[in-house]
Image 1: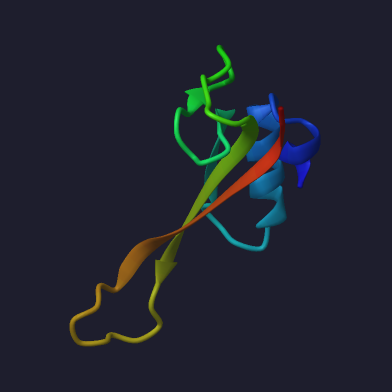
Image 2 (image 1 turned 60 degrees about the vertical axis):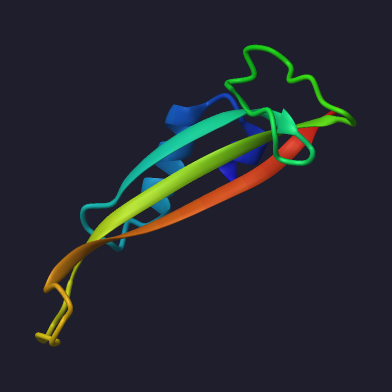
Length: 95
């Protein structure tokens, strides 16, 4: 994953995510990174400060990708089109 090697390059993470789904049309992505305590509390966007933690902190990256989807047939109770979204969050280091 590009973001593990370049956690501060959110533009590159978005590009890698969209390029990885190049067989789908209309894919959009967003990416963030930050720091948080190892128990998941105290998140700080872009690691502008180090969170105060009981034990240690970790850095993470988070990428959300969405793509439009349209059904081939009508199904009762389901919309004919929708966005499908997938989020990946990975811890990449810390103290």
